[in-house]
Image (cartoon, rainbow, N blue to C red; front, side, top):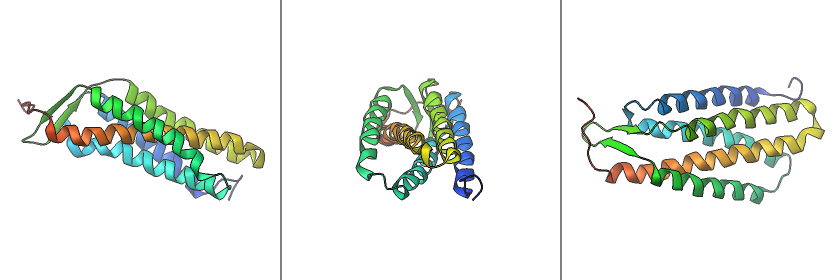
Length: 165
């Protein structure tokens, strides 16, 4: 433990970089495998679970994290239900729309992790900053998981569009 940081903070930084990478790949509007839609929510879920464990170790009540996650799930489900989607059912390819919302949500994850690291560097007086970072990460994770859950349903029922021309 150096400056109140541990190896999980390094994992958080690497995970945040991976989340931005996956969001940039999806935001280009190119064809991708339908399973690749779930990589960003899985990375975000892992990051927010690490931040949640940090907060539970600091004796924060667990119920306070349900509100941002629920709000994020609702917003993400709405986004997943209203986005334009082209699906090739034969080759399991998908072309999601290239909206910038996904990119901004994925950029909020490194900001949340930066708040966690800054709060850890400050020490015990930085716990409100760490709590705000955890709430932000859980809100973003709710957005991404809600969107992925609705897309999982929509990918199975979407009409076929020939994308391999």
